[in-house]
Each structure stands twice: as C-alpha cells, then as structure tokens.
Image (cartoon, rainbow, N blue to C red; front, side):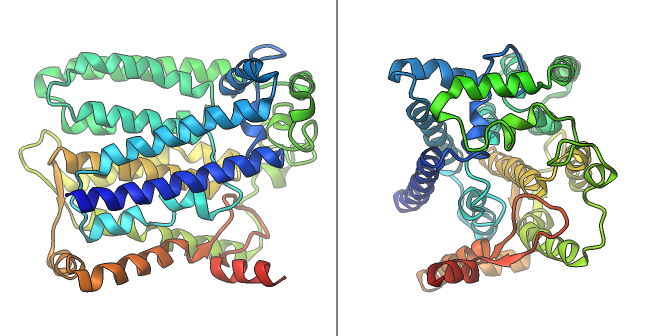
Length: 406
C-alpha cells in the first residue's frame, strides 16, 4: 500500500510542478489566453467570468498591486489543492489495467501538460468542486440533506465560467447510486431547485455578457500587467463580442457554423484523435460491472446516461471552438465518477481479458514496460484544444524534435 501511494504521490507532485511552471511562464509572458482568462474583473461593474479576476485584483493590493504575484499565488493554491484532492480520491484504488490506462489517457491528467495552449483553465475549479463533492459522498454517515450546500455552491462556478452550466448533470450522476427509495422525493426536489437556480444564474450572465467599455476598463485596471493585445485579442476582448462572432467581431455564417467546411484533413485528424483518446473510457465501460444490490444497477442505462451527459453539452460545441477541451472535461468528470464508484464498492472491472492483463501487469517484469507504453500512448498525439478548418493532428514527439533542432 505504501509503495502504491508513493507512486501516486510522485505522479501528482510531478504534475503539480509542471503546472506551476506553466503558470509562471503564462504570467511572465502576459499570455493573452492562459493568463488573461483569469483576469476578467468587475472594475466596470458585474460581467460574466469576473469572479476570480476580481479576487486576484483585490488580493494584489497586498503586493503593491502586482497582478502577476497575486495571480501566481491564487492559481498555485488551486493547482496544489486540485492534485491533493486527486490523491485523496485515488490513493485506495486497486491499480489494475483499467485504472492504469484511464489515469494515463490523453484527455485526462496529461491534457493540461501536453497541449501547450490549454494551460491551467477555469475548469480546474469545477474539478476541485466535483472531487470534493465525491469525497463527501464517500463518507459512511453522509446525509442527503448535506447536499444542499453543493447545490448552492455550484452556481457560483458559473460566475467563473458560464460554460460550466453544460456539465450540470454530473452533479446528479453519483447520487443515482446512493439515493434510497425513501429519499427519492427529497432528491427530486433538490435536483429541481439546483437546475432552477443554475438556469437563472445562466440567464443573468447572458444579459451581462460584457461590452467594449468592460474591455477597456479591465485592461486599464491591470495597467502594466494587462495581457498581450488586451483590448483586441483574447478572453478579455471577447467580452465585447457576441456569441459565434469571428475574430473580426462580426457574425457570419462561417463563424456560426465554423465546424462545417471542406477541409477533410481537419475532420479526419480530429476523429482519429477522439477515437484514440476515448479508448481508455471504452475499455472502462466495456468491462464495467455494477453491483446488483444498488438501486441503479442497469449497465445499459448507465451507457444511456453517459450519452445524455454528452448530449446536454451540445450547445457548448456549437457556440465555441474548444472541442478537445470540452471533451476533456467530460473525460475528467466521468473518470472521477469511476474512481468514486470503485471507492464505494459499487463497480468493478471484470472479464477474461482484464483478468489476464491484471496478472501480467502486477508482475514487476511487465509493470515498468506497461507504464512507459501507456505514457507514450497518452502523449503520442498532439491536437490543439480547438477545432476548425486548418487545424491538424500532430505527433507530439516529432513536434518537440522539430522545435528543438530548429
């Protein structure tokens, strides 16, 4: 057990250090997208995505208004807490073949690190909320009444990024396994209030999308720490744009239907990347076994629920380009659920193939080879976090090699 925990600790420490280096690099370069996304604030009044930026802005008063220092400290706290919670969620897992491949899958932990333009995005707060929520559910004495605090906390995440709304059903998913028949009415009431409050907040944000006045005021408030091209490029500038505007700020049929074009290589590359990246999840669901003594124990219905979760987020894919990022969020939340359900003893992975693989990987002779192979698998392909015409699937190591010798 100690050695298993030590391996996980080392893994998460390495990820945390790489993430901190990424934060430092983003702040040093005043990166428009990875640094600027966090700095949207309320200096011109309430506006979408401004909660954390206002916190960073106010916190900077302790450091002579140094936004970089404030940004790095607050984001570092988020990163370290995120990986700490991940360790708490996974430390008692049986590290079998399925858990190895999902931990090292391309769209999971390695996604933040490998895809250079992703960086530490605001969904990390969704992950922190969700893992803490799952850890609370694993408590033996957890009462459904305690769920109210999470119902009222989740809408606050929408003030960080309104796109989180499209992952709302994931809050309901883990409860399907623990709600007792006598508590069904209480659970339905909670789900209804949860959906209503979140929808009202989303509507409020829609009517406070932002304007050019917000853009100019925010950029001015950041002074010398304003990200590059602050008033005409990046997330801060995007506050002045309507949904589906192109980069020139105009709504066109090409920008509204950006995913419909004649570039077959873009389609083929992205489809290959998705199939490749979703293989670990396919294996996990293919060999999933749900305990029969659960209220929810139908494996086929579980598949339908997973499909519904993806279907619920379709508007997000229609309105924005960051398709790999949105798929990665799905992968994260589903895998977090698989970890939670294993911790609760509700599911296991069974089958002749899985049993044979478990026997092989548990031997010291093959474990190192397997881990190296899976790491290569998780980092082999490189696709930008966005999808539209002209984007290409690349080989990560070829790209690194080319840049090194260029």
